[in-house]
Image (tube, rainbow, N blue to C red):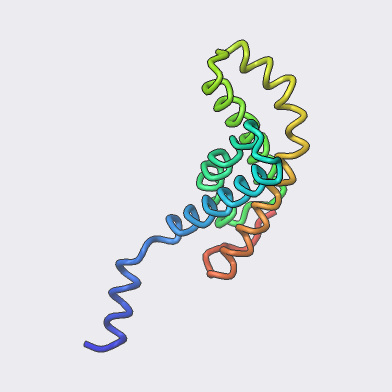
Length: 141
């Protein structure tokens, strides 16, 4: 019983790489959401970026860890951010499904100009962090 046996136990009982990648992706998404809300002078619409960034960062980080292309993940995450943000906004303001559709058309589609670059920033930061920790697979096409 020495250091070597304790090391095996720690590795066996530690969190799985999938859990760690989700925690890292959610944390980076949370940080980018807070940064965009602060930069936007705490506008009510931009405050929705905080939970949206954390949720989508948590959900999309396994794609980064698998080695999916950054562009594909960023585009999907940008579209998902618009849909989730519009859903949160319609739920908070009690405007219903018709309001969701109108808000998505008027506000959501132009917001893709902002959400996709922020999602690309998230993807790059997450990929670099996971590679640094040895949790990311090689990039696939």
